[in-house]
Amino acid sequence: QAGRGDLPVEIWERVKNHPCYSEDAHHHYARMHVAVAPACNIQCNYCNRKYDCANESRPGVVSEKLTPEQAVRKVIAVATTIPQMTVLGIAGPGDALANPAKTFKTLALVTEAAPDIKLCLSTNGLALPDYVDTIVRAKVDHVTITINMVDPEIGAKIYPWIFFNHKRYTGIEAARILTNRQLQGLEMLSERGILCKINSVMIPNINDDHLVEVNKAVTSRGAFLHNIMPLISVPEHGTAFGLNGQRGPTAQELKTLQDACEGKINMMRHCRQCRADAVGLLGEDRSAEFTNDQVMKMD
Ligand code: SF4
Ligand code: SF4
Image (tube, rainbow, N blue to C red; front, side, top):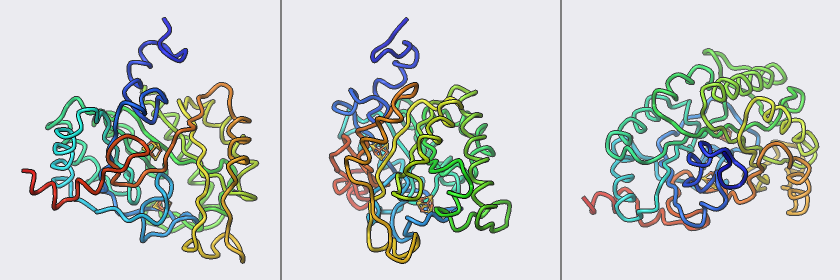
């Protein structure tokens, strides 16, 4: 039986209230992120650690970091004020799975306090295979994995290092471990019925042509949605990509690539690259109404 947008009914039921997974829903339903995950286990050349994880967010935005207890108070305050808030995500400011204690404690507290809210998290995927069971037990509905390459030679231009099994790896070796772990994690989640969105950052002359390959690789491993986002070039990226820094793609370049990937998998085209403490409808930022100080006053 078909649901809306040619999706099977059981899948439609799971995505219809999720503003990122359903383009229809993003006009009516709100999401919120809580910034409980400051640490990261890899280095992306486009990241500046002073700010939120650029895999999910606009670079150059600093979110207010919260403890799990502060985060759940904020969730309750937002859910009371904005009844259309259906989804809670953990999207940084670092990597959700590089901060497992904080991430899973927050998810458990939210489930206890507000069991109807859908849970999602974003990760670079390095630690993902180790946490698939924990993610399933935590009743996470949706996971976003940022996958920028499936070719370690390209990966070496994007990731200067990763930290894995208590050791730092660099270059092609680092990128090979990362891509293997990302794809393995995606397959494991797909097998367990968790809906996976893949974020890819389009970086001209580095991975732009290659993202069609990434699209095929993630489609064949059961990804539900592919979100190709433009690199937002900022001076803080410095010269990590080359002597003259790195430009982002034009709107036309982005659309051409998204069109080339359109096929078996849904392409997300309404991503707003939200902050790690975003609150509200996509494209609407109400985070300033729900700072920790304000939430304390609402109690
Ligand atoms: Fe920065 Fe996110 Fe990359 Fe970690 S995964 S280095 S926080 S952009
Ligand atoms: Fe959704 Fe994109 Fe915002 Fe993430 S960054 S919450 S995918 S719109």
